[in-house]
Image (cartoon, rainbow, N blue to C red; front, side, top):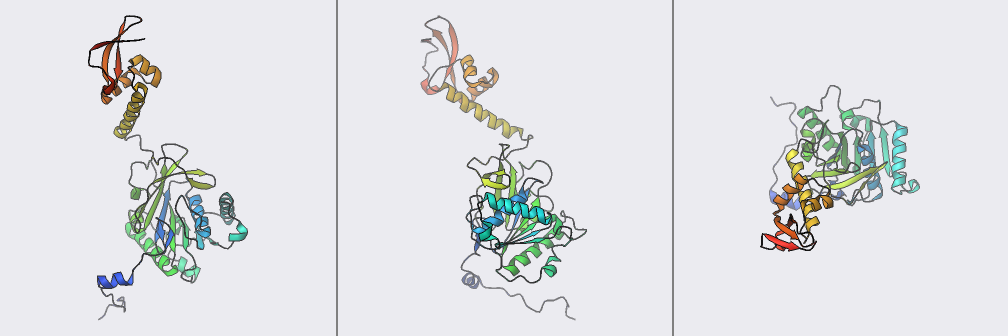
Length: 348
């Protein structure tokens, strides 16, 4: 007897030549370097970091065609499905973000549609029945904020199979609606600095693997900044960028994107400190010959740290006699400017 669950439409292989000829171009871009129509993305950050504000800024960027955190954007309508905020709070946030982005609501008041689901307990699987049919291409981007509130009752975000089912449903919506879908999700507790980008995010590993783009916000070495990193499937992954949250808006800043590392990374931290010390000592010496006391005065560093740095950079010490006092002292110089004699005179 035939299996009643067997689909009547057969799956047939396609010759590679036919596949290439039938798909000459990639899907249309929504956010350059990050997201295309039909793709899904995660926006990951620790609780209360401002990831919902980032999603709001992304929504307005797509709705207006403005650049988003240094990425070009193709203008299109946006749908926000929010299950965390009261309608009043969401309205206030989106209005404030628009003001900061100098967006005239009279011109773009219908560029974003919003569905507020707080308190309605509607899972991602039940959403399709409640939304009705959304015409393909009606939106360029749909934002789901937040993932954990879309999970069916009893579902654990640590369950790989369950979360894969959730992302299969998101893929279904993305293809059915012909839009990209961005999902807001929280990072796991604790320090995130030494994790790979795809390991940042609470729950099952399938969450990062299933999405086409995985964006994470991590602390910067500068406590006033953060670092935005992204791995992508259909683009070359973009370089990390330093960003700053000045309520209510995230903006890119022209600073090296140095992720704050865990204090446990002693070796890496010490290597960085040693490098900084070496550069400071080299700059202080220049073409001169300086004693440890003079280096302490110029650099503010202790004698032991200076001694270790002098050893690392290969500085050469010589006993030098002062013409004015007749006393000798050990003075250090960069090798290229050091004479060969073991004791020389200097004017001091």
